[in-house]
Image (cartoon, rainbow, N blue to C red):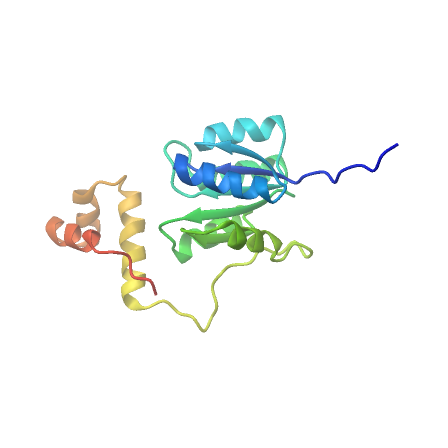
Length: 185
């Protein structure tokens, strides 16, 4: 009998951005992973019910079921699945929520295969999820304001008028703030 090839780790990549999803899938396939892709949360959960992945990369914001719902669903199917959540709208509140639901780590886009693979490895032996937040690395007031605006806007279903009213701002003032790039720190 010949020597057996090592079994590839299974990875599920869930992102509604077709280009990003396929690029990330190819990068992990080149590293020896058995990659499956899903363009939304519902498709991801159906795929996971057929065969639960060892690893998953999940976008936070997608049409239909959110990335947090996918994290919760994957964790319910198999608590050993290591999930990394990716988002273009990083906030401490969503990072904490993702970890509470079972994510191993939380990264802001753009993240490459090296960063994601390193995130999978963090805390792998002890079962503890880690957050990419250091106590000595407090966000600036501008960053906290931007995160709060994004959270309120999401809660308002993307409706700028409703979000402006909840924030106590004029609609045009909120539109100006939203037109600016996110504050990095």
